[in-house]
Amino acid sequence: MVLRGLNISKKYSSEFSIKDVNIEVCSGEIVAIFGASGSGKSTLLHIIGLLEKADSGSLFILNECIFNQQKSTDRFLSKIRANFISFVYQFHHLLPELSVLENIVISLTISGKFQQETYIKAKESLEFLEILHLIDKYPHMLSGGERQRVAIARAIVANKPIILADEPTGNLDSVNSNLIWRKLKYLSLNKNITILIATHDNECSKIADRKIIMKDGKLLY
Ligand SMILES: Nc1ncnc2c1ncn2[C@@H]1O[C@H](COP(=O)(O)OP(=O)(O)O)[C@@H](O)[C@H]1O
Ligand SMILES: [Mg+2]
Image (cartoon, rainbow, N blue to C red; front, side):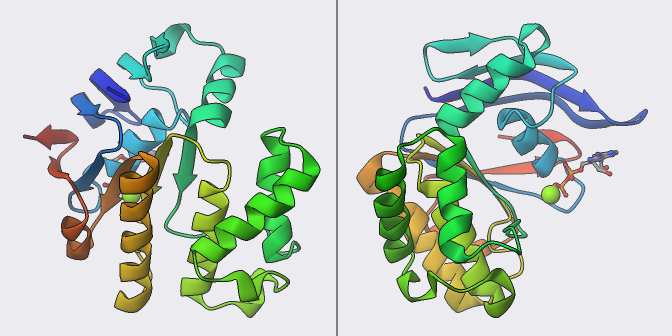
């Protein structure tokens, strides 16, 4: 088991955004969470991605990192995030003043990788997303689909075992979306990466090993 959440709840206001959510994701599995807007998908992904803390419940990430979120320090959570979790957002979050290559390299530098290796790895991941030719461009010069491919190249370059993707094809056409689904499937099958996706895109069903519906803050099994 790579991810396990037990009775995770979170409230932003008087209403629960997610309530008593139980979820397990196995190694190399692709799990897709479908649900209407406002059903709590992003909240759940942010909690599992350690970007936000749950109000209650427990989270287990890989066997050796078992913790109850309330008791974990921010330093510990950042370390887990840096080592194990890549997050892909609907909107690419690329840094506008950096080139494609620099956007990717900077994420590796943050993870503490050695410099020469970072350039090789950055190029490999751009090649994998079929955008090596964009290496010296800046985000404003790219189409939406190209930017999202760069964001995915950046997410996978550090080769972390878990990818969390929050509507990664949310604003893409079907050609770009399908490329992204295909690449994620490849990573699951060939690199055993565990992938949890929140999406509206029915095409994701084709690559998901398992689908879960989220409604009103709960997962319907
Ligand atoms: N930062 C926040 N502050 C206040 N309410 C929030 C915040 N994030 C999410 N919510 C609320 O939590 C509920 C679930 O939202 P969200 O997880 O974004 O759903 P989804 O991703 O499925 O659209 C919504 O009612 C939303 O308004
Ligand atoms: Mg969302």
